[in-house]
Image (tube, rainbow, N blue to C red):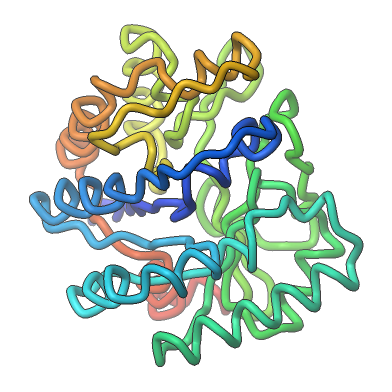
Amino acid sequence: MEQRKKYAVFTMDVEEFTDTECVANSGETVTRDMLDGLDEYIRLLEKHQIRATMFTVCRTAQREKERLQRYLHRGHRIALHGLQHTPPDCMDDARFLRETREAKMLLEEEFQTKVTGYRAPCFSLDRSKLNILRGLGFRYDSSRMDFAPARHVEKLDMSDFRELLKDVFWKNGFYEFGMTCQKLFGKNYPISGGGYVRLGHWNFIMPLIGSYLRENDYYVFYLHPFEMSRQRPPALRSLKLYDRYYLNSGLRTYRLKVEAIIRMLKSCGYTFVTFDELADILENKGETK
C-alpha cells in the first residue's frame, strides 16, 4: 500500500512589535520593532531546509524591502497580512476591499511577484470578506481558526467548500488553509503555534501535537517576530497583567519548542512545503476535480 503524503507549512505573521494588539492599544510610545525575530526564524527554518510563507503587513514590507527581498531570493514566499495591522472585523466591507486591493497591488509592484495568499490580523475574517478575497484574485486564505474563545476570531462556515485534507478547504480554485487544532475533552485547542504553543506547558502541548500528527496529513505553524527576537520586549507599565504575561512568558524556550515540533514532523513523515506548493500538489493529484 502506498504511504499517504503528509504536508507541513511554516509561516510567520511579519509585523512590528507595535502592531501587537495590546501594545497598539496601550497608548505608549514604542520604538523597538523586534523584526530581528524574522531573521532568527528564517535561520532556524533554513537549517532544516524549510521555506517560509511570510504573511506581511504591507507598510512593514515597504520599510523592510531589502530584508524581505533577500528571503524571497532564497525561495521563501511573501503573502499579505493587511495594509496595516487592522483586524478585518474592525472594518466594513468597503474599507476592507479598498485596503486589501491597495495592499496587494503595492506588494506586487514592490517585490515584482504575484501575491496569492492572505491571512487576517487576529484571524478575524468572515464569509463576506472571504468572498472579497476571492474576487480580488487571491488563490488562498489562511485565517480560519476553529477556536471560539479567541478574541476577534470569526467562525468561517465552510459547508459549501470541499474538505480536501483536515482543515484544508477548496471551492472553484480557491483554498482555505485553516489553522491546526486538536480535540481536547471534545473541544478544539490550537496547536499551530503563536501564544497557544509558547505559553502552554510543554508536557501538555507536546502530546496534543504528537497525537494530531500521527492521525492527520496537514499541519501549519505560525508565530510573530517578537517571539523569536533576541531582544527583550520593552516594559510597558500601562499593560494589564495578562498582556504582560503574553508578551514575556516562554520567549527563551520558544526556539527549542519550534525545533522540537520540526523534529516531530520529520519523524511522522511530513514534507515541508509553502501554501502555493501545497495548492499545486493538490491540483496535480486531481484532488480538486
